Each structure stands twice: as structure tokens, then as C-alpha cells.
Image (cartoon, rainbow, N blue to C red; front, top):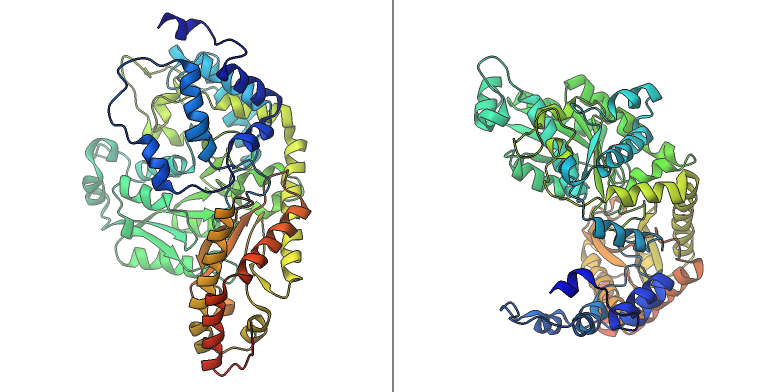
Length: 538
């Protein structure tokens, strides 16, 4: 037991070889050890079904061999330049040794006593991201960045906890202490509603809002039914007129809108809400305005495309995930607050930890024990720099526009949503069906859509199983198809290693898979004949 805490394995051991391979060629290691063919999850589960804790210790190399064969081999190659289905990308190589350093230091960021220099480092990172969003002057950050009684934000495990923290602050700020009411944190939600005379609290967000907001509404006692989805326009952005009507309706019913949530980079289509107009409505009604920029927030690092997020600086709080377009490992979410004093509404203290007057970060965050992920963001910001990030962001957006043009040039594919950031959606449609859809009635589209949905699902599943490339799928209600629920391919083009040639290959692979979907295409053919759309073959 003493050895495993003090003496590393020899360089020629399995673990030693892994470390060397990872440090010299990460992509090569992943390519060599992650198998391309998909293994059914039920088979993988058999390797992890032993419920008893092992009685005897095991040699590290022996255990590492197990991990290589049973875990690594069947993990997802998220760093692959042809893995373009989700918001996960290749990581810069320099983060691997830094991650080892971070794990070795094992700092707990909840308190100064277990983090020391990591605490001012984290506050520094929060300050840099706050400046990225709000662009206050140097005097502001000199005064507030390291203030024990204030905070410009908090690190979180991800966007879910960041959104929850923002709404927690909004709730406690709204139902704050007043007269004989000690505040919601002390007296609870029912007492707060009664004291202020509200029948309910409501959160307003677009139909494209992230599911984490429903979790927040649940945990904070607001109720999922009081998370109201506001209609979006044909570009998947919230309709400002519908938002204003929703605010008025809630007030008329005796409720209070706790928060309006703007989305800067929707998960499904990557679109950005009209943030400035939403901020104006929030200000008019005295409502907390939060922006979920978990995905799109990094766009602010590009001077050229920063304008896409105009109005974000008006938000009371903002969520950004550094483990998305800032290219650091998972578990680096942040919530930022425009006012340094907002966090006082959620402040917690204890005698043995996060004491009154200390600079312990745990006093202003939902999570307790957590690692020093701020170090990874700090290092990335310095090694890559703003100009390096701008290059990455610009490249991603321009790559998405290239792919959209490529899809438009095909006679058997169609673009469903245009890219605003680096997300887009599209689907395969046989040429004659594509031509017929342009003149089809609402009834005909309703009849054809289930067949096209089945074809899209088939292609996406077979492509994933082949292991050569990966795109995800989602379901949208496109205005051009009378809002029929339509299954579409969804791609995220954030990986800097993805090339134009690879994108063309992905399209060709999907086309070849579609050629083998004879029964599905036959059913689509039959449906069109019955509808009198007169085509001979597909």
C-alpha cells in the first residue's frame, strides 16, 4: 500500500507506456485504442456487473490492461475530427500534463485552507470572463475581483449548475428579507410568496431553452410547469412580442416572473436570442435577466463575431462553459454576475469552513468540494490567448458556413437551419422528393414527414455504428414544413482538426447508407404515389 502512494510504475510498465504515448501523441493513442466498431451497451455492461468490492489489491499494470481493453476501447472518440455530432472537441496537448499537476495538487476550492493560491487564481479567471462579457474598467476589477464580501461569479461543474445558481440568486434576491419576513433562505418559498402576495413564480425562456432550466425550476421549488416556453420565430429565436405578452399574462394572473432567460447558442440549432430587446422587457418589468451562453459565450473572444451576442452585457447573470468552445476538459462551467453584491443573497457560512469574512469561495457557490478547474482555464487563456481563440472561433463559424453551402449544392440533401454560430441541421431527401416538397401542401408534408424521419434515423444510426464518423440527430418543427416534427441531422463544427474534405466524406457516407435503405425508400415512394405526387423512383 505504501508503494502505490509513493512510487510510480517503471517506464516500461503498461501505465508508463500509456503516459509516454499520451504525452507524445494523444490523437494517435486514442486512434490506436478506441475501436471503431460500436459494441452493444448490454455487452459492455457485462464487464461492469460485479457488485462486490474486490477483496485483494491488484497490480496497477494488470488493472490498466483491463481499462484499456474494456473501458478505453469502447469509449467515444470525441476528439476525432469526424466526431461532429456534439459539443465536444479535441483538446490542446498541453492540458494533459497540466491536468496531472492539478490532480496531484488535489486542491479543494471550497476554502482557502485547502486551496491557497488557487483561490485568487479562480477569482482572476472569473474576473477575466466577467470583463469579456461586461467590459468594465480596471478600477472596477481592482475593487471587486478579490473582495471577500463580494463575487463576480462562481465556477461550477457545468452549465446546469451555473444556470441553477443564477436562478437561485434571482429567487433569493426577489424574495429577500423584508419586515418580519426573514427572507426565503430562512423562511422558505411558501412564506415568501405569501409575504409578497405572489400566487406563483415563473421563468420565461424560448422553446429552445436547455433542459437544465427545468431541473432548476424543480430544485428551487418553482415547479416545472412554471417554466414557460415562449414561442420562437422561423429562425429559432424567441419572439419578443410573445415574451412581452407572457410577462403581462403572468402579472395579470397574480404571479411574478422570477427571470427571463435569453439563449446565446441554442443546443439544437446554435441560434442567439435578441438579447438587447429581451433585456429591455426585463428592465421594464423589474425582472432578473439571465443569459444561458454555455455554448455561445466563447464567441465573445472573437472581435469579428462578438456582435452576434449584442445585448449580453445587459444581463444580470451569464452562464459560460469553458469545456465547450474554450477547449478545456469537462467540468469547467461558470456563472457570472453583473453586480458583485448579487451573491450576498445566497451567502452561507460555517465555523469550521467558509467562515464569515474569509475569502473562501464556497460561501458563494452551490457546490462544496470541487477541483481547481480554474487552473486549466487560466492556462488555456494564457497559452492560446484571445487572438488564438479568435482564430479558433472564426474558423469554426466559417467552416459551418462552408458546410451549409456544401449541403445546398447537393440535390439529395437539404439544409434545415442556417448556421448562426457553428451549429447547423440538415437531412437527406431523395432528389425527386426534394423537388416535390417545394410545392407540397400541408397535408402532403404531414404524410411524408414520418417516412423522411425514419430515413434520417436509419442513416444516423448506421453511420454511428460504422464508427467512421458521427453526427447527432434531433427533432425540430421547421416553419417551412408547416411545423411538422422533423428529425434532422445536427452537426457541431468546433473541432479545429475537422477539414473541408472530411465534411464532404461525411456527406458521401450518408448518401451511400441511404442507398441501402431500400425498404424505407420504398415506403416513401408508395406514400408519394398514393398522394398523387407522381414519381417513378427515388
